[in-house]
Length: 323
Image (cartoon, rainbow, N blue to C red):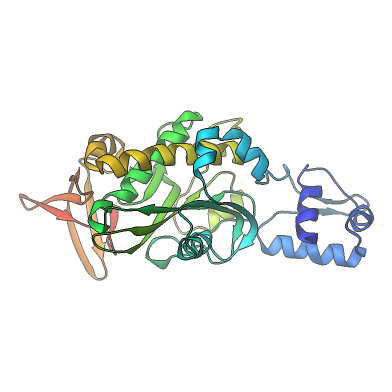
């Protein structure tokens, strides 16, 4: 609770003395200092100036459930059975999965910080506190596992469309679950599925979008990255961004459940970051080179190699552009 109050006080970007913060939080100045140190371990940049106090440059754009709900259409809000915003969690995907196991039909779970956020293939998702969007959508599908082929590609299209609504153009999709812009990573998707081959399935759609990453953090990531703030000036803030993406996701999930991925295939082809380009497919120690020819109706990647067109499915395969 103390951490949350401290963040709210510092979110305005102004200087606050240790004495002022201590009085408002009901703790000592040394306790304030310890809380500031904790913020820094979470990736929050805090200026400390003698005689002036503490300040977070540019402030913090904190998630707020009420502001989010106001930005969401009444219809979309009414469809979300659970809406959970947390300060710090291990993983929003874990929260979503627990909700499904407890019987929830669906729900949205968002957090300012994930201590164990994961990307595809178990990789760590790097995201400083309150800098990006980390959220998971829990959903149930009734048509069985086979009907979920191409789901992660459909989710990518939904996120791309939501970003476009807010003026973030030139977003491309990298098979099977990355969002790129200017050749750099903007976001990622992690879909986890469990359930019956012919019956109801529990699906957790985890999403990470870079919104306003400190330059130092961008440099620490092991691949070229970009954020929304670097693509569009004056974006409406994380709450409106989250509401817009969720709105687009709900619309796309409805279409996907009724018609599958095949009706979206051509749209995905247009956004394909490696469309008709030479690529390498990497699976463990095995590599295949060829020309990316898009995807089929099931969402498999089509690779033209040695005059043959071969379909490759997700799992542990990575795609790399050839120099």
